[in-house]
Image (cartoon, rainbow, N blue to C red; front, side, top):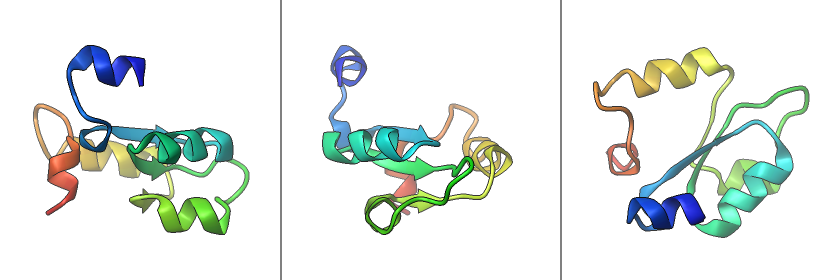
Length: 79
């Protein structure tokens, strides 16, 4: 949340891209929109249900982020 605060943003305006259960849970608890990229284990039911998106690979994440030249922001995930 320190980085969110330094950027002058609200947590719900930010996206956390996480590959670990603990990282995803922390980001969910902080109020960030969470995109999960599973590593060796699939996310738990809690993380899957409370994440904005679960994607298969970082290639999927790159494709999403390249949709906007300035990068993907949480507001764009709403649409």
